[in-house]
Length: 268
Image (cartoon, rainbow, N blue to C red; front, side):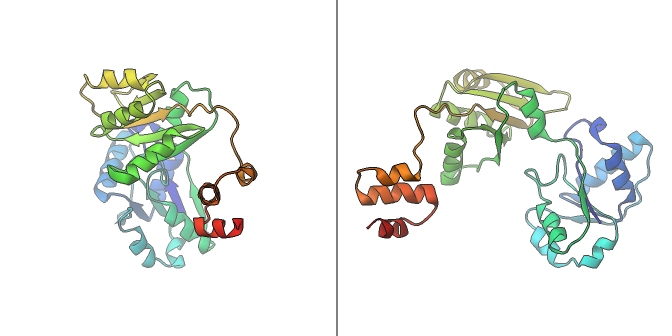
């Protein structure tokens, strides 16, 4: 059986009894970094006065997960297998989903334990009254991919949640400010850790504040949804517009996901 075990994102007291029991019963542990996992188990062993007997640790991360999966057979899951991230919830901006899908494809038993998660914790901390959000993970470091994803974030009709490193936090705030300086954003630093801190203000004020501070730690960013005005057009509305067919085809292709050529041929 496979068990996905969430680990503390800072405070070791956030480990659950169920997580400890799963780790004590584990016969094989897949983890992002075996060194990090072994260190965590050592700390938990000393803190909780427990003994973890698993000696079989295997690296399983975004760069090798497909290769590792090819080495597995359904019979391997007759033993107790645990997957754990370095910190937080597996499958949430971390590996683990391919292991779950392997179990689904092979009709194997698996379980996911609830636990520490920066996305939901920051969402609850933010004070936004919105009940819907979209989690975008990390932005690309640079280039077209980063620009396109940030545009999508800033045009989202729901709260947008991002992870960001201390090295790029100011850059991200500046880019948000350049798109909409009045947009309210919420920042959470080092959630559950000793230096946990939160901020909420306009993008402009936040940028001016952080240009004067030494930014450290891991961050969660929550961005207020875009304010829409007027009535949104649907496909039928676009089809009725008296505009050039090529322009109409481009608009419909954007909305439907079809190629411009295919849409244009159907308009003629």
